[in-house]
Length: 471
Image 1 (cartoon, rainbow, N blue to C red):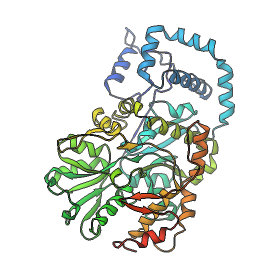
Image 2 (cartoon, helix red, strand yellow):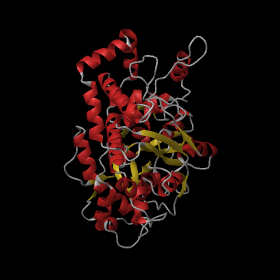
Image 3 (cartoon, rainbow, N blue to C red):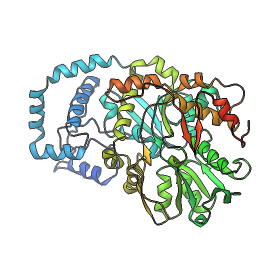
Image 4 (cartoon, helix red, strand yellow):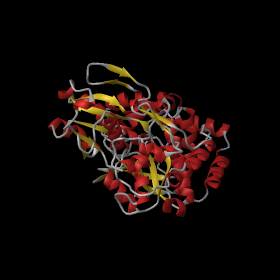
């Protein structure tokens, strides 16, 4: 089951009555107020002045980008200013300062003809998908001439299957998924690419409140834990964590695959003792006074990848201009999400029913890193979740070592080649620099994970260093 979203982010940027964030069917207070304001005294709707064709859409894209840029993408400040000064006055002033017709023509020429403008992008309603989601109500897709329908999806198996059968043009995926799909692990084999990571950190181990006296993982024998998918950082980090404490994740505990939105209900029902899950469900368990945060995953590996933006290699090859525009929109949105000053605004944009369907204060606690831990403390961890689009090859190599360690893949693995084929670090770096962002010159680096060095140049030696493993 999925929810299709219509957007109004290409509304008239000079109209103070019109919100440029949230969808047309959003039921939040602000959007209901806006809908009422657009009704004339006789009960008929005022003209929303939406673009009628692709030419008008591109013109509106330019106007919106300039106006949004003037106000730092703060829709509240834009609307306040338009109401105070008058939208017509601002439009006239802007036209006198910028050669608008020339800018619009140049943008259309620079972008090149897009092979497709209407795209379907699947997502799971979790904060890891923040850039993919917020790019919709906050106008980042439209900035590049794209009309993107973001589709809320019930689980990762559906994301995988809808991507394999081309129902989705691109999707929010767990970072191990494109690697697994490209190798044919757990599904039919098809080449997928990850040109951008969505988020780093952003996960936690949550335990039921009944287990407050069991903070030592060696006390977890017989526990049942939930993870969102087998091919997930959640699964591999949980396995790594308990194994480092001497537990065999296949013998001493049980690990069940549970869709993220069902994690809290299963914890409440006693079906599981804990979970390693994406947010906001870790914080939701605290909010509902069912669980507590045992550990943020950044304490296992600070800066670890979580979710990714992915598409098939076929889509990128057959639609190069559309793919390029989509990647730029995603990287732009990810960089915007990385600024802590934008997090509260983003929380409001992604909270409504058609996106995360969560209380704004729950999302804010995750995105700002100031949160209640369920144990009576309020913690400040600004990088509890962060957003960095660069898909390091070494991240892919580590994931592959864990897939082999636990028997998800077998035989010889060309770690470096698979990493280069799937995680497009060089391409991401080029786009980041083109958009004015800093990007690493190298594409791999070593990591410290629970005090142990991961040397990406010798993955087999790293794999052999573990006593608890399947292969």
